[in-house]
Length: 108
Image 1 (cartoon, rainbow, N blue to C red):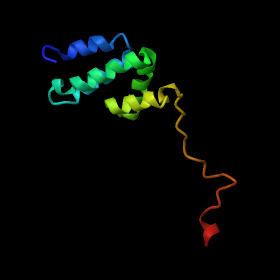
Image 2: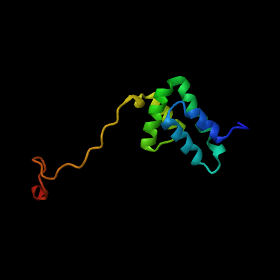
Image 3: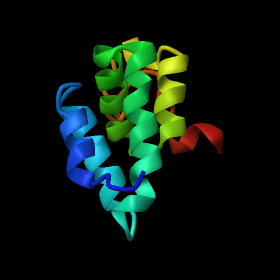
Image 4: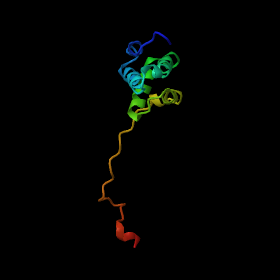
């Protein structure tokens, strides 16, 4: 991998999509020396050959949301089709004034 540099990986990631570019950028920045992230970045980018750019972009978006920016995590998302699932909205707290809420006096 001699002669490779971080901007080249970002250049390769750009056509895939902005989420993929962000993931690659963060992978390279997370290492003390960007060269330590080259293998991970290259592995992530190679997933586009097997799954296509759209699926890799969706997987990178999901990985970024979950803050799991590893090759293994992104490959697992693709393998299990999680990139094709729409995220469920976070459910807020249940209202305290609900017919099924018994309150503290019920158990005493």
